[in-house]
Image 1 (cartoon, one colour):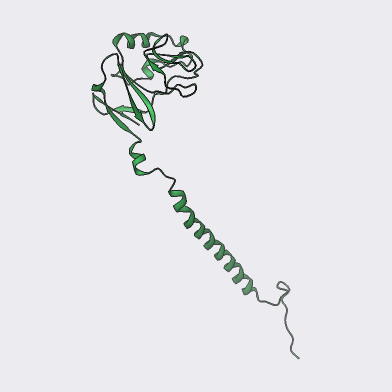
Image 2 (tube, rainbow, N blue to C red):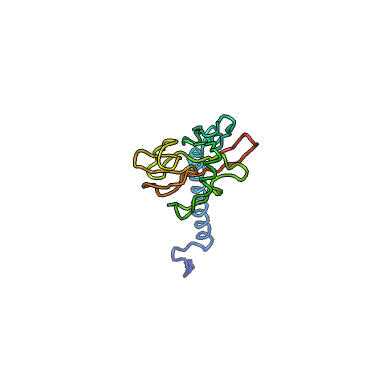
Length: 184
């Protein structure tokens, strides 16, 4: 008669090595499944990145010599209108002299333009109330007027009257030369 030795830790009579091997196989299979899932998911996630032509539109350059004093040009950047306005000396002076206490969203004119180029104002042309496009040269402050709900902006694009909560947005921009500006 032969006796069988049963390990008290392993009631099935298997050696401890089998349990360790089985655990390793489960962990390895789980790791392989996670790796396979990542390999499948990566192309799906990566395809959501912007295309090269979209990234090319992330910034745009504009020749300021196309704008006459007292006028503005509307360009499109990232699907949004951008107003590039060449302000007169009087408009620059009035915008700089406006007390911040008169403004709904206090911001100095100097904070909205680049030093040495105060005559040029670059703002996103969407009303900050509901996204309408304000009309140039209208309203009570010589800047823009949004006819949809009556928001009035001054010559620095600051909200002065109406329901718009904030000033027209100044996009990120820089001068690449005295006559060229890069937006974005």
